Image 1: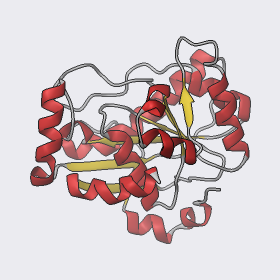
Image 2: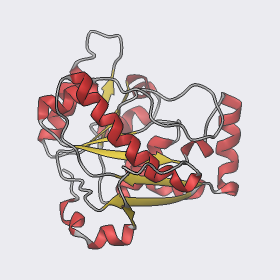
Image 3: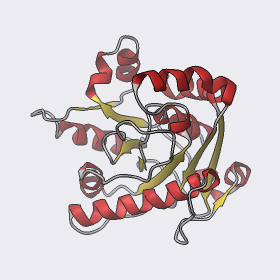
Length: 241
């Protein structure tokens, strides 16, 4: 339900472009790691993934389960609540691992939150928490880096600024970009693996953000169009339970 709703609403708020690396693959049982810059980027990411035929299990703050209607949708979709500073916090990794074992893709935000305040300027991924690395180590799942850019042009800053941005976005139609990078296998201890994941997501973010004026890193993966993605071997691997 969340993916269908996002796919229906996002085109009203901006122009979404999705690109996939030449070695990109969204195979069943993969962890999708995305950068988190805005309250609006989860909808943008879900809409982009649905264009690629994927509806992931989302790991999100447990407080969202208390929101009327949204909470019910999260329960029905089998999404995973993340409880911070709670004795049950480690259980979210077990729930995510179970979803991966069933062949689902799991979407996780390694940063664990969004930047406070600020304007619509693009921001690179901040330091990651270790949950992503621990989940990958426990399951052996590959990590698919996802970079998104433009969400801050929809919502950013304080409450009033965010409301104004959301209200005017259908008129402004900001450029929204999502790039899927090549899967990586994390290695080493949690700190090393976490740094590897952040580097891969940062490369994907640079590719997505380059049209928004962010210099492209030479190590960033080359992008190609959605049309090419659909006609390539990637299409044979796009699946979910």
